[in-house]
Amino acid sequence: MVTLITNNRLGRGNGAPPTVWRSSFMSITVPSTTPATTSLLSPGRQALDSALFQLDQAADRLGLDDGLRTMLATPRRSLTVAVPVRREDGRMDVVQGFRVQHNITRGPAKGGIRFHPSTDIHEVTALAMWMTWKCALVGIPYGGAKGGVSVDPASLTTRELERVTRRYVNEILPIIGPERDIPAPDVGTDEQTMAWIMDTYSVNTGYPVPGVVTGKPTTLGGSLGRAGATSRGVQLAALKALPGSPEGRTVAVQGFGKVGALAARYLADAGCRVVAVSDVTGAVVNRSGLDVDDLRAWVAETGGVYGYRRADALSHAELLELDVDVLVPAALEGVITEENAPRIRARLIVEGANGPTTPEADRILADAGTTVVPDILANAGGVIVSYLEWVQNLQACSWNANEVEVRLRDLMESSFDAVAATSAERGVTLRQAAHIIGVGRVAEAHRMRGLYP
Ligand code: NAD
Image (cartoon, rainbow, N blue to C red; front, side, top):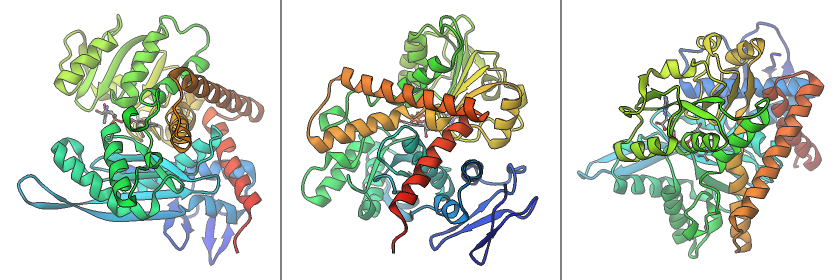
């Protein structure tokens, strides 16, 4: 469905020019149907087109009025900042940083911070929007946000990285805080980054504020279970979606970072055979099964999976197209496209990454009978335990690992069941069902709060 805004009145057309969502903050162009060939667009722009397309589909199914659609398509706050950084040789570089609060109707904004060279405002907006639906879907009282700095952390020394982090946080300081917006780790950031953010915020506030970030080291109020939470959620989602026993099921994992490496480990723990993994350095395969812990040790020592001796090398493209039971994309957006989707042979795709599958690929996979557990459900374990960490920080208490695990499992499994039930009732894919629930809950919250003034 196409929605056109002309002089604040919305009309609909077919095959018409792309939709323009306008607000005082920004205007966003929505593709007219499933996005046409988008290869000329930046990866961030493609991610935003996908997110807006998914919203449009859910809004159609929910029968949302045009004003509400526009509200949900428009980020509440978008901040772009310059981050000057003093390099070790005395030079000054300037990189761009972003923080987008897509929606704060159900609670404070929540979402990770990404350090990656191709991060831009469009990508961060898309990721913030997905966070809004994710938090609503799993029923935690947050809106959605995301942040990013367009920098390659591997190109910086630790001291430069610390300076970039602290300066970026200083620039976004007015809009974050435990009651406003709570960052967390994402691609290229980790618990050390969160510790620097907590320190910078606390120094500026004058007292320690552990609840300003989640995914912190446990010594600073981080929660037990947070480091592996996203991967544990991916494992739980995969086990729910797999028909029958996981024993011996073959798995390929794209991305061997915080999410992918532990997802591989937990799926192996559940009895699956992890046969292939990739990261930015390369891809490796061993049909008899990889020793995930041995591979993690190799990566810790060498910096990547490339050259791992107990496996054969593989191309990045080949990994995605392996004949396996389960494929876990756990790297970046837009990796399963209309170009490679017809060659994907996995029976089940569990999206550890945000936005790995384009809408065109989604349609091809659905037609082929491939089950896709969508990102906003499959990787929600991270934000669930982030929420538990924040609750512990606000109450100045700490729960044991079992308490965290029980709450994580309950929320993941009940959310999965709700999505599966909606999918069956309405005859839609799991992704469409997840968006119907997530978008529907946010729309309902807007209706109940009303419009001020
Ligand atoms: P990370 O930086 O720890 O790991 C990213 C991994 O992807 C690295 O191993 C990197 O080498 C690899 N990679 C990058 N480009 C690649 C390519 N072209 N081919 C193969 N591998 C490639 O990041 P992460 O925190 O594990 O996040 C991964 C994904 O999971 C992202 O989409 C992120 O938004 C999503 N996610 C993360 C969390 C979390 O708690 N960290 C929560 C929810 C969703």
